[in-house]
Length: 230
Image 1 (cartoon, rainbow, N blue to C red):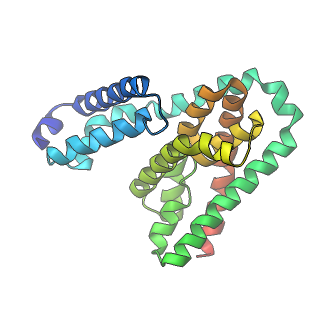
Image 2: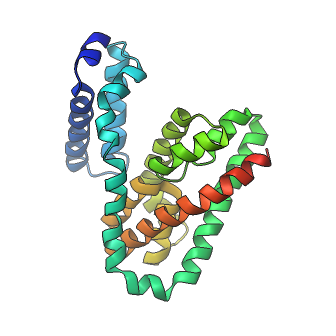
């Protein structure tokens, strides 16, 4: 089975797209939070890889063309942000303080859990950039001494978890303001959270898009400092 992937340039891309299509159709058929298309696609890909004894490295080589779309997909999120530029300007100070606080809180949580369970420094460094978009997280992880592959896995997990529980958390804590909801989605769950925010509303999507950019910048600055504290 590995030979099929090695000899086919686009088989991994096809597998990923088919699994995602199945995820989208399932989400339409069963409109519940747990039926997230990306979550379903991830599970299906893992099942296929395990059943066919296909290594992740082999699959990644065959599907890496899809990763080229990460940067333009992230940049395209600036469109809803541009549409709400007046709202951004009006609340800029509060938004930046909120995002900075969120980044600090997220990394302090990783530090606390790492200390509590005695994880290795390498794993700790790999987890620090878990809440920012993959395109930035991989570079940050490699720069501070983490393992980019582990970071990518945690970025995906964090995004999926955020997209699944965001409505429940906001309802539980009575968070209803569209700016607050959007910032929470982007700051905690990056691009995957932003896709969920766009489903909720245009303002939420715009704020989440801004959160991705700001959180990425703050993490680039803060991650090396937090790395030295471990």
